[in-house]
Image (cartoon, rainbow, N blue to C red; front, side):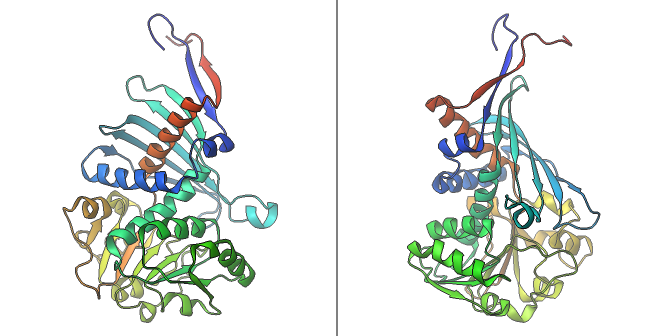
Length: 347
């Protein structure tokens, strides 16, 4: 929009077009997830509390819609975004469709007008895996050899791919899923990485014997199952699905804590927040990943430290990666231009 032309057009990018623009490029996803965490530490990201709309009150692992927003003011990019991501755990079982789907709207910083509406399903999944992997890169023991995955769904695909790129000493992957056939299929899909895959009969075999553990399950509040006795000395855990670890495991099994965005401590919907508000954990004892990346704070101080990491998803990571995909799409001439208005009716 320029001069007397008041027309506003928005580029619509389908999931297929986002993939063509780089949505499945894990190297790009990792690069911009790390950059955004650093920008956050440098004060170049503004992100409010997220909003969760629950279809069933109290069922945080059931049907819900997450609403996120972010604003980036870095040297590389200046823009804002709003993301909506509904999740229904019954979709894969009942409809053979994805559990989650995301849409993100990108906005010009100068005008506040939108310039792109894009699928965010792929980016949202991959940046979740990238966030846990970056937590491991900066907080796990560099010589970690065993990766433990609890749950073998979509998010764990992102986890193993991202971790393979940043943790270079992994030799074995221990898998547990309530559906053993799904674990076997997962191992077959990732056999090209050259790891030794071990399908565990019990979840304890995965958690207690792994240097790096990612939990991605459908457990809800009150269904916590990982006790403090399973936390291996020197291990790093990313509690992606939030309700896997008991309070005792978090408070006594671990001695160091890190998360990607400490503002989320104001949210009462996950364990670190509840434990902090209850006075059982001090906010100052929780490090922020961006500060660790920047070098202004330290999380792991010894090989024996046991670190609990939380990533609740920084919308700015979706924003930055979606903007790169948008730029690639424009360069490739893909997408559908949609008119928002020719003349603003309310001016």
